[in-house]
Image (tube, rainbow over the protein chains, first blue to last red):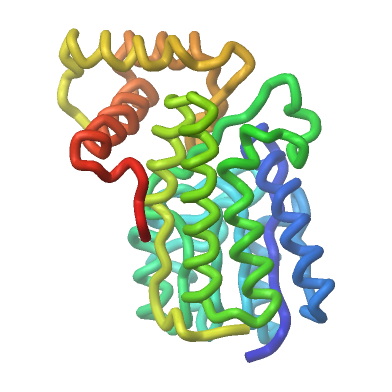
Length: 211
Length: 73
């Protein structure tokens, strides 16, 4: 599998601003482990660019950040960039990780049917808490970290050569740790959102594969 | 979630939201990021966001009841 990764990092609202900050950390893990990264940053995270790169270069991994629904992952300004029934075949032969609401539900299955090796993502809305007083420094936001750290754990493990299954288990473990931290801090409202994400986080396809 | 939210459930969820720290917001999918007061208002209004909040909170309470609060795997 080519050690090359395509990443989308839109940044047009508070949610994508946070995802971009945490996503860039994941990109660094990949680069530190000799994975060639093509980043579609901010307004470059559009359908035309995504399709063009996936059509013209062999990528082993696709890392998508943005809003979504059961059938789409979205890019800059919520433009659908991968759409079930239209272009999911672009993910053929890749391990795809989409931090995007609900896309693992239909798009994940459609992608695998169309030849994607794996689709890791969320089968429900992805939610996270944030500390308004830290919102200009997403990586220092401990509230957000409880929800987003697992995404970096997953990407770090993949970058180091773990299988999707191993990386997924580590990421789930990270979410369990976050649940314990939230419980011990006595903040039960955070627990509810964390548990939601924990059960929404799924991995489909050949999870024995690795980059 | 299309069912009307009962008064009892609404009160329960709003009580749970009340304990949220004031500096905390929740990013809910494509809907945006909401403060405690925003979320309470959406639950009162029973709109899409409010119904989603109720869905999450009720799933949490079910998890407690079923002993699934601390997943083992």
